[in-house]
Each structure stands twice: as C-alpha cells, then as structure tokens.
Length: 254
Length: 238
Image (cartoon, rainbow over all chains, first blue to last red; front, side, top):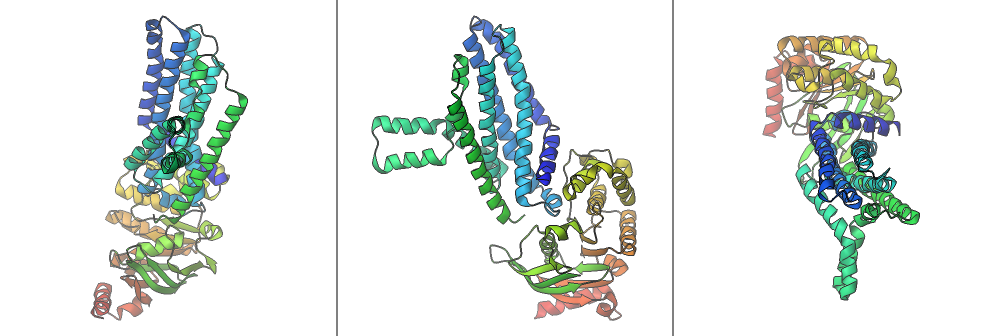
C-alpha cells in the first residue's frame, strides 16, 4: 500500500507541473467566467446559468481526464521510466494502481478549482450556495475516474493516440447505450438484434447513471439510493477495468 | 552468488534471445561481453524482473532474483536511462529511495547528496533532468542504482555516452565499490573497460554463453579484442 501511495504522490507532483494541464484549466476557468456574460444573454435565468456552467465544467473535466488517462501511464511505459520503478521492490499492480490514484488526485484538484469558480459564479448571480450543483460536480468526478480507469486499461495494450480514439468512443457509447436499449424496447426489436444491443449495454459503462446536471439545474435532489447505486456501479466497473489492466500489464514485455 | 540455470528467453515470433544459458557468478566485478543484440540486456532485464524467462531460473544467493527481498539487495541501471524530465536530480533520488522504503526517504538527504557528489553531478542536483546532458543522465542513473546501498549492482552499458574523464571517474567509482564489498555485474560491448576493471568475464553471442572465466585465461596472451573476435568467429563457423 505504501508503494502505491509513493507512486500516486509522484504522479500528482509530475502532472501538476505539466503546462498542457494548466492550459486546459485556464480555458475551463475562462469558460466559467464566460458563463457570466451568457447569463446576461439569458436574462440571468438561474437554471440556464447553472446549465451552462455545469456543462462547461463537464466538458473541460472530460478533456482533462482523457488527457491524463491516455498519456501519463503510456508515457511511463513507452519512455521506459518504468525500468527504474519496476526493478525496485514494486509490483506492476502497485505501479498501475498508484498511477490511477495519482491521476484521480490530479483530477480532484482540477475539479475543485473549477468547482470553486462555478460556486462563485452562482453566488454572484444571487443563486445562493448551489449544493445540488456541487453534487452534480461530484457525480461528474466519479464518472471521470471511471473514464481514467478505462483510458489506463486501453493504454496497457495500445498506443496513446489509439487510446484517445478508443476512450472517446467509449465515452460516446457510454452516454447513448442506455437510450439505444430503451429505443430497442420501444420499437420492439427482438431476437439476435436485441441481444446484440443488450450485450453492448452490459459491456460499455452506462455513463448516464452519473448525470445529475439536469436535476441540479431544476433544483431537484438526486435520491440517495440512485447516488449510492451509481457509486457502487463506478466502483465495480473501476475494479474490473484495473484488474484487467493489471492482468495485461503483468504479461507485457517491457 | 548469482546463478543462472538453463535460462531461455524466446519472444513471440519464435526469436530466441537467450538460449539455455547456465552460469554461476561469484566475483567482485563480472564483465558480460557481447555484440549488440547478443542477449546481454535481455539477461539483465530478466535478473531484475523486467522480463520473464520462457524457461530456466535466476537466483541470487539461492533466492529468486525477482523476489522482493532480493530486489532490496540489488541496484539496477538500465541502458540509456530515461527519467521523469520535469524532476530534479535530487527529487529523482528521493523517489527511487522511497520505492525501497517509503518512510526512510525523510532523513536521508545527506546520503543522496553524497551519492550525487560521488558521481559528479552534485552541482546539478536542483536542475530539472530535461536540462541534463547524456553523460549527466548516465551519472544520475548510476547514482540511483546505489541509493539503497545494494550488495549487488547490475549495470547495463554504464559508460556509454560518457566522455573520457567521465569514463575514468565512473570506473574509479566501480573500483571503490568493489573495495566496499559490492558485487558488480557489468554489461558492456567495450572491451577496454572489461580488461581494466573486471575480475572475470562472460562472452555471449546470439543468446549462447561461449566463455566464462578470468580475462587472463581467456586472452591466452593475446589482446582481448583479438581473442573475442576469434571466439565469436569460431562459433559462427559452427
């Protein structure tokens, strides 16, 4: 466990020195500020302001998660820095899990920075403290940790560029797969076609489970059971992805 | 003692990098000689656990070399070391030490400083590694291999990229380490280095061990380079 923490701390330290990450955060911050002007355009209607703010945060967090997940682990292996680490009493599993935790910490930091900007924005627009918005941001964060786990999993057998393609694809499918299954039921698709849709539904993560933005925008609370279920879903999915990643990485010739 | 027993490494396309390699090494400085692609790096990577043998075993004082306990007693410097470019030399030393013992790193600054002084990059300790020259990277790679005060050192082409003064300094450090009782397994294709500092040599060619013994016995009164070419040539004819 201690080795995992050493790797995680080191990952955090290195990633926060990355200028690309700062660039993305600055753009995210600017977007939240831009929402101030958008608020004037929509006559300061609070739900619209919230919607702009939360969607922007989601977009920038997704870019950060994609950037972190597809580059950090892959670079360490591809540039052979792992030679120094894995020749010491550190297992491949410890290294991989340490990287994952470290990247989640980086993401937590960037999410917190953007969340402060968002909460400030809503306070400025006389919306009070947006606790529901904060819950939506927490759900976004959980979704993004799953996203990072998937990106690391793909990085164990693919290049950085292909990881971006695969992870982006899964991100898209993860958001539409539950709608596709619903549509298939509505239209009345049966047999093999329905089975295929069902397989897709179970293979790809259902990222819609983490979407609390619409609820927050309309001042609706997410039931605790739904929140708990989403949390458990993410935990199980992440454990499965990281287990598969460790299995592949263990067999990889480096 | 490092013991290799029937060690074989075959890659996916049936390319055999190491073929039924057996050897016992128990000298202070062992030079492992071979041409590029002979299998030297593959063997050193198997010792430290970066590659898994297809068959055979490697033990260090009777225990598998990839055991956590064995790894604590060894230091490793890879060929052409790559680092975290945005770290400083001193930070990298701290990281490497923390990987042996996460709690030890706090009070060991003096040791890192001494090691960086020993390899001649103390003045650059607070510079980011991306500003280091190739020679400085080699020196840092060497220093981190010593961070846990290992009994066994596995060095893969440690003198590559060093200027003549740097080579002399590093060879001197190896001699000092020998006096301290450490055992060094040195991968190289530079014959002069072997002649100068090694107590025994192993000659590997196309994954097979052709000779193991003292340099003097191997040379039979001839220059090392000439003998090396002879032995490799004889094997090629077979």
